[in-house]
Image (cartoon, rainbow, N blue to C red; front, side):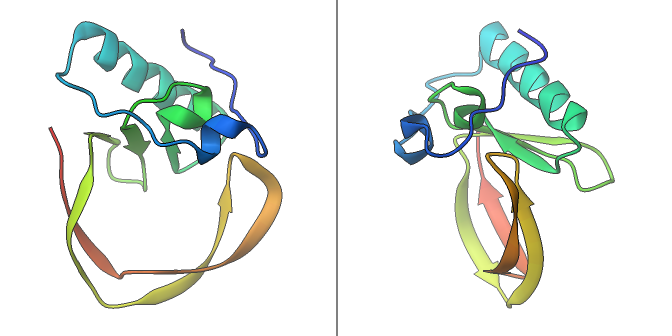
Length: 109
């Protein structure tokens, strides 16, 4: 599955709700590895399974220390605020200011 195609807007999967993952299986681990490889190949910092056409709540993030995989992530706490320029692999050639929390706590399986 490595080298997945990144879905771009206006593909309807990007607007649909992703499904919870009931348990982490070998298939889910493989999906996460493939999403991470695809993200790195595209020089991204984060990518979610729906962005490669899979409606599951799996995301990968790599901001420089080491990659993080989150399955069924839920923000449980957030503090502060920051604004920065961001892009999105599913919205190529579009960059804009995005307001986000400065710190978040995330629960996942």
